[in-house]
Image (cartoon, rainbow, N blue to C red):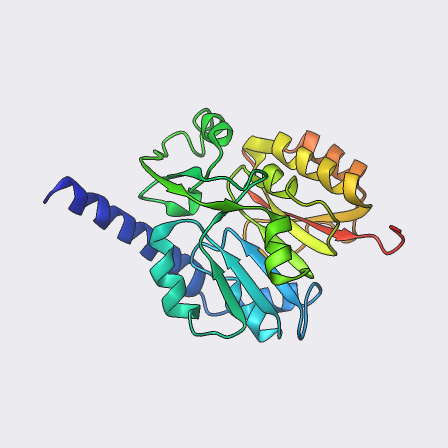
Length: 256
């Protein structure tokens, strides 16, 4: 078997693993639908930044939302086209999102493509951790990129934005010049400073309240929304060995 065939098989197995993880558990979609119903409903627009194989798209469609799914990884494109290419309420965007809007390099571990990232800083940090130290980002693609402002200009103002881009979340949020109603961004315990920069950017736009969901639990960690300062204090105390998750931000009603 040639090297290209071996590499192709590794990519295929990695994507198959993603499809099993995200689509094969029957109750996952209904849990997602209930969880996201607080953020979107009939006719709302939602951005899925880092869509990968699109596991958020179907529950969002079931809530009546329109979806802009953004995924730069070329090997995900056939899957997204097959699953959602004919959905009239889904726009598929094959670009990265950053604060420059210029072409960028996407680094991909063939055995686990969910960890694809354009952040060289994150790759250097990840190499020093126990969780990601054995991962090899052994494939590269040059991909076009856009900004959140650019997506909003093209598609409209979203009710919700999900951002999962492996350590580049701060640069994605930095590309937003006006506040949005609600969003989430990935929390990687090995990259807490990235999450802190996300909070700083959001608070420069408006006043938000926050909560945390660990792994794919689709449950909030706190029984009430917390302030930016309370979230910063929480982030200072989390152990590096904690599982990854997502931070949710909702704009305060009295924010002007």
